[in-house]
Image 1 (tube, one colour):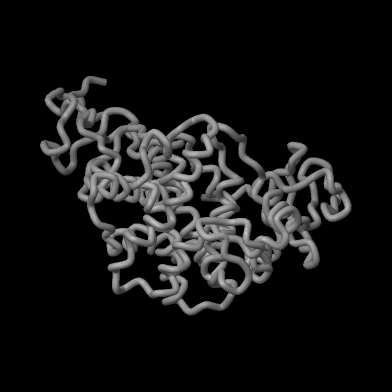
Image 2 (cartoon, rainbow, N blue to C red):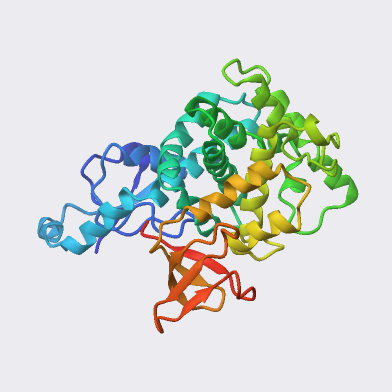
Length: 364
């Protein structure tokens, strides 16, 4: 198919994309044969796509090719267009642009941050199981931007489970999204270093909560306790955190919400120096290995999201087998009873400790 590369500034509504456009995403941000509409422009701009391959409409047979696009492709495009992953990917792209602005010296525009996460917050509050697949979208290259959006969504879900009002849920989600904004003030070579950090470099990284606080301190729409949560999100109940080593009741409950979301997502994602872990295995690790570091009410709130998974939810187990949740173990939420698809065998994960849920199998 003949095509021409068209500058974004010259792109016309109705033009047809000549081939899939990728942008460090699992799926194309635009599929081949997509007709350009007004909503595509901010997406292309956010991903810094400067030139777009457009079908050469001068050829006489192009009209016929447009008509011949199969209904199955159209269905796939429409499904992806409206999918959670698409909305999430767009939010990550927008956040990345905001962070680059901060890196260049711009002030935090909290309204833009809020606009980028609100549609996703509404969706995860209705479909909480989405937080268990966020790690599948993350990439090692853009991990930082994925992480900020993800901990925002996870914090929102935890806050709702703890019966916070919708207004406070939004405030906590926004605070979580900008908790690491101060990383923009850290030397780029340090924050993007692939190998182990030196003691000096780690101390520099530990300064980012202070910078984050400074960057949001002037924002009147962000509550005082949310600003403190941003500053404290690396503090721990036992005093082992940073930047001040605060402990006990000195660490706000809001801080613990962001902290648990932060650790949960970080441990479930693929990193340059570490392979990803199952979200369900990580929940056990937070509850058992890190006992005493986080407020137990916050940890329990995240655990109940597993307990509330719908019976009939499909899962993949750590041994590669797939099955369906048929019973929730209230005393061990991450270890429900599973009916295997292939053999109809019933497996109680609370009794089979060597097997755990690797991931959920969800319709996007």
